[in-house]
Length: 170
Ligand SMILES: [Zn+2]
Image (tube, rainbow, N blue to C red; front, side, top):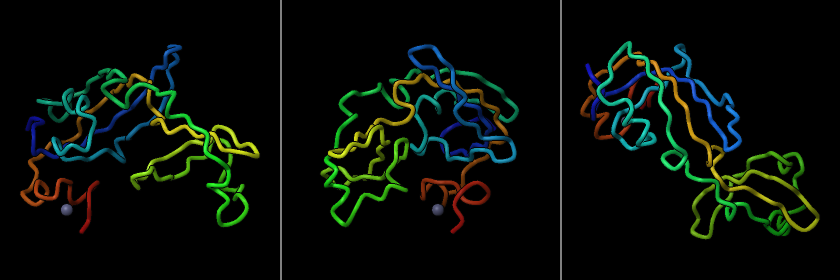
């Protein structure tokens, strides 16, 4: 069976990124023992990722690159902001076990949407946070092996996700 809309795809992958300085960093893998399982065409994956998989079948091995603008976007300087320390100390002193450089903290924007900020610096007056996606500004290099392709059930299509192994259990 070939990968198409309304198929359930099981695959293993290796993802590397490539920064502007041309440094490749090993970022993440989904090994064969713990593969990625997803409903193709449900809008849960990067569209370019799905585009590269279209028509492929079990056993296929492929390598492709996704430019950063088709992945997590360019790095935005405006998404690096300083937030007054009082925002974090309304209910007592700053929890320094949680708030430290490098920590990723869930925050809310003015519309109540949750977003994640990575702490870059903590001063007496403010905390500098980076709200860019960790892979913003990086081109993504994928090496993928297709392990299985099956037809999605009507229920999976209605729910927009996979049931059973690697998916939802409900
Ligand atoms: Zn479901």
